[in-house]
Amino acid sequence: GAGVSQTPSNKVTEKGKYVELRCDPISGHTALYWYRQSLGQGPEFLIYFQGTGAADDSGLPNDRFFAVRPEGSVSTLKIQRTERGDSAVYLCASSPSGVGGGTEAFFGQGTRLTVV
Amino acid sequence: AQSVTQLGSHVSVSEGALVLLRCNYSSSVPPYLFWYVQYPNQGLQLLLKYTSAATLVKGINGFEAEFKKSETSFHLTKPSAHMSDAAEYFCAVSASSNTGKLIFGQGTTLQVKP
Image 1: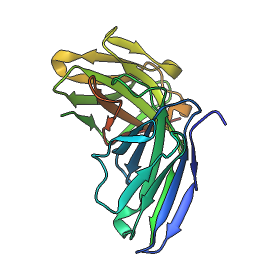
Image 2: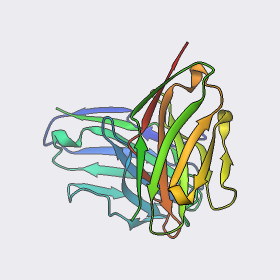
Image 3: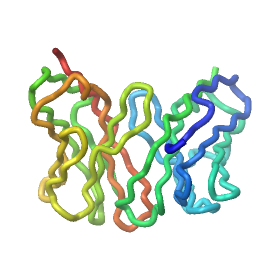
Image 4: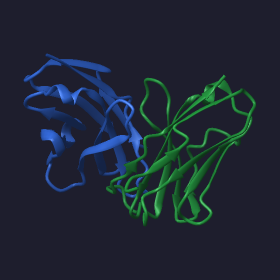
């Protein structure tokens, strides 16, 4: 596909469980971002990858959240010991380079996570 | 540090009327500014962006925005609303020296009445 793909589109999990959310960026895009969008709010930055490395993880709320991008393409956001407050839409975006602040980011449709 | 404030969480206009969505920003460095649109059950789509070239920026679907440094504003306008413009709109800022990380406002839901 031509766009950013996120799977699953919806995920319901029980409190305390572990979840993984997947992002397939646009082919060739070296920059990848994760954002979290709570109900009625704008997206909030979580983490930024340039290639395989996490260049900025300042938005991760705590150590239950972790993300990887081992081959510089697909990324997985991992949440341990989920809490009800983690319920949100998790958005992934990619851009051709990510260097400089004027780069356009292309967003996926998001994964809606519900913790019950 | 950067921040964005969108004035008005909901805006309602009649079809054919002017659309005005307000955005004010705070930035310690010259900003790059963006407007994104989010249709129901879809991802965010870029409408337009300001990157220190022309202060009046034209985007897709007839939208435009004007960067006003003195007012720290980047309001989005469209002369004539269409029903298809009903969506949620987000203003965002990115510092010129960083890596493309976006700071978003809380969003404005645009309702278009027939």
